[in-house]
Image 1 (cartoon, rainbow, N blue to C red):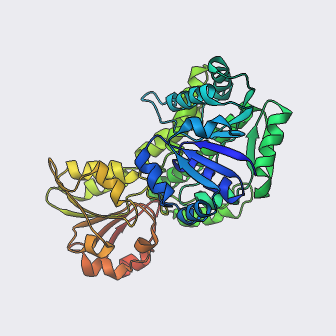
Image 2 (cartoon, rainbow, N blue to C red):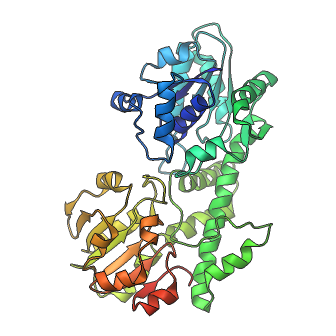
Image 3 (tube, rainbow, N blue to C red):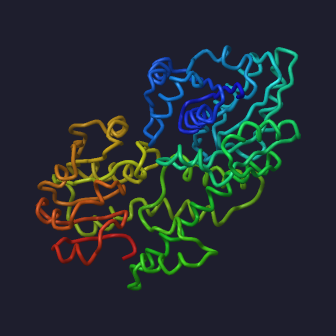
Length: 437
């Protein structure tokens, strides 16, 4: 067992802390929000992730998982301190490192024993070097502090599983001692460990995320061409998936990627390249394609409709993907803004994302359209003039084609996730538009 502190209790920090406790370490998670800390002490997760609350309660009960706002007590005698705070996108696309700097200074002024500081947050290449120097600049006690890079590769919706059953653990260190300590921390997980230098670890994170984002944008680009030439993107993807060089994952066409990683990381790498006098043309194209793809269905609908004013628009799915309550960079946001500004009366359903959506789109009458939240897909569809599908939740997938015909005033469906069979929708007399088919 190792004494570990984790700074930040968002997706990265909270999942890491809970999983370290599950692996047998003594873990203290630190957050500045006292109310948030209190609910976590009760075993209630502030984010929705399958299996997370169960592990929180389990490890709270056995005394291996603690939550506090007292960073001094948490960092003072920790053997390892993991930094999992946010690095939000700046207006120019660069990463905001102010939270990293705050935690680094707190560590420097607090630690009373030799320790390893491990940055899990996604940071530009070279940041860990700066963090180590920054901590040394403000160090109060005569102790040795080394910094390592340990980027996370969890996917929201499957974050706990991805952490406990990762394909590999990436660790970036500058000394044998730091490398061995991280290997000891991760030994209970029984997972492959790839040990590299710090800057390589930082780059691996961006290279992986941006490659997957590129793959998605490429398929969306091909899907758009499929529509023009009469091909079916699902057939194309199936044929591609058998090629081991390509693989079967991330071949689904849709309305673009969202979430806390891909949009931010593509822009950050683009910014980093330009800072060094280099242009990442592939990544820049990816960003451009994704931006246009998000509102492609709305643009199609606008060509079909005279006006959205006064129409009931059913919106099925708000989160950027199923399995999470996260709305960051979700395609639904761009489309809701357009629908509401065009005067539509939106009736939105999402099994997990409603609470967060209300913070962005309060219920009631706006300047043009009206926003309403409902408890079921059927309630959203009842009497609707048009329907948009933005998230692939099971409850939405399960809707039978005939139900659109039965419930809607005008069975007109724009499906951004290709959830339904075009032939079955046609047979059910539903006017149906999807991506690349």
